[in-house]
Each structure stands twice: as structure tokens, then as C-alpha cells.
Image: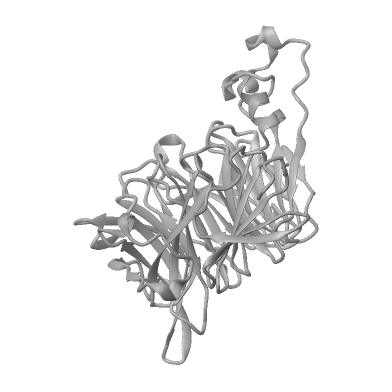
Length: 427
């Protein structure tokens, strides 16, 4: 009999076995898959999902705002690769999954359409003429994927369905594709692919079954410049893009495909990831191999407005909370995930909403806050459930207090924001 007052329950679903393990400090016991656990919801750690192969590609299902759902792409050289659809039932604390085959190659990046929850993109490696080529494509899930089998975590007990190819996003003249970015809050008809030193803006036509390049931009300079990551800004009518190459960060105007700004040596080593503050249109976060996370005001890129140095190895991913921009997640090769409360540079530095114009024009525009100090930034939680490099972290698109992280050994960990912080923000 499980004791309901245990406050350190870790729930693990091992996909190559048909049991769900509930681990506590005192014992390990097993139950059939999809059992009801943790009725009192006394913990903030929800669970682990351990895949049978390596994985590094993770995204929330952006168009799904009712169900808590994440998509994971595997990275296997020996077996057919797969898309795992992970559902979490918050009411009953049940984790379930569905599996779709991705037979074209190992998945390095995955993205979800903002308009159609059945459509996704992948960047993958395939072998062509004895060399490895990085490609990209847009896919549709089978029409009955939501009603598919969710009963067993054993992949051998049912035959996974195959994704339907809608179109390729490959242009051999531009090189290997690193990632595909969907237009934020768009109709799912525009994507950007980053291929070597080219940014390609694609228009998806006829139910996304055709893709045409509408415009391009290129990195110019000495050496073999290559994009490593990018982020499509949700601000300014989605007309701006930010990219990273080597140690530099660049901003682009998509209307003219011209460079707006460049932050040279933004990090001491390779820049790994970028994210825009959803509530402050000029604020950008970056992370890199120098173990640092930096926050920038792109109107003045001489110095970062804030720098975090909490990780001890490369930082692979940084994500702002979609609703509460003071909450920032970072994932690193030090096997840790860190949740920070960056309230001093958020849209609510004094505990209530203050827009960019007020902050930039000085205290005269917010007399009520005169004499007040901005709230203090802090590390809220450090999560150490992973045992390998954590390559990706994503907030749920349906629940602003829930997030998932993925490490290379295939372990997906779902966590909640601590309740004390949640209520402190809401109240």
C-alpha cells in the first residue's frame, strides 16, 4: 500500500518494459501501465519517461492548448527512428504515449505547427552517396493518431503507424539543414529553415503538400560560416528573426531579408540556443558553450543586461515561460535543469505589469513604484533527475506551470513549477 504522504515520488515509464515503476527513498514497486498515482499531488516532480534509444529532439505540441502533450524524436543508428507522442493527464497524474515511425533517419530537431496539431517538421540525417546529409521535411500524423493505442509502454505490443510526408524542405544548393522554425502564432503556412549559411523563408501551399522558397538571406564573411540555431520573434508582426553562428548573434528583418544588428562575441564559445521574451519585445535570451546564459536588450547590444553562470558545462537550451516571463528554464550538459526567477528584467519587475516604454522612459512614468527596488532574481530550483546531457527543455503549451526536459539517454522528465512560487506570482 503506497503511503500518500511520501513527498519524493518519482514515476518512471520504461518503454521497453510493460510496467510503471514508482520509486521512493524506501522501496520500489511496480504497477500496470497507466495506474492512478499520487492522488494528493504532493510533489512537483511528476515523472520520467525512459525511451529505449537516444533522443535529443523535443517540442510541445504548440497548437494543442487543452491537452498537455509533448513530441519527442529519437536518434538511433540501429533501429527505425520514431516520434513519441507523450500525453500527461494532470487530473489523474497519468502519462501515456503513442508512437509514429520516422523511417528516413535520426532526428536532430523537431518543430510543431502553431495552427494544426497534426502537422510537424523534423530535421534528420540520412546517408546519400556514402555521405551523411542533413535534411528537413514537413509531416502529418495519421488521421486516427489521437485514438491510437495508449495502453502499453512496450513498443513491441503494437505496430506503430507511419507519418505522412507532406513536403521536403531541402534545397541541395543551400547545404545541410540545422533547424526549421514555424512562424509564431501564424496560420502554419510559413516556415524558416537554416541551412549552412542560408536562412530560407518557405511558403507552404495546398495543405502544406508543396513548399516554395519566397526569400533568402545569407551569412557573409571569412571562413565557412554556419548557422547553429535561430528563433522567430513573436513580436513586430513576426517580421524579425534572430540567428546564432559561432559566437555571434544576428537579427534579421524578414521583410527585406537584411541584417538589423549583430552581437559579436555574444558568448566566449559557441552559441547554442536563443529565445525571445514573450512579453518584452526587445528582450532576448541566449546560452552557449561558455556555460553562461545571457539576456539582451537588442536596442543596445554592447553589453548583456544580465548574465547567469549557474551551470558547469555547455548550456544547450534556454526557454522563457510563455505567460510569466520571469520564469526561465535552462538545460545543460552538466545533467542539470535550472529554473530561474528573473523578475528584475521581466515585464513585472515590481510585482505588476510594466511595459517597455515605461521602463525605458524612467521613473516619472511609474510614480507608484518610486522608491521601490525591483524584486530580486534567484534560482528557484535545480533539477537533477537526469543522468546524461540535457539537450532540450520546453514549456507546455496547455499548462504554463508544467515543463518537460530531455536528455541524450532518452529520459524525458516532466516537472511542475513549485507551488509556492506559482501562488506568489498569481497572488
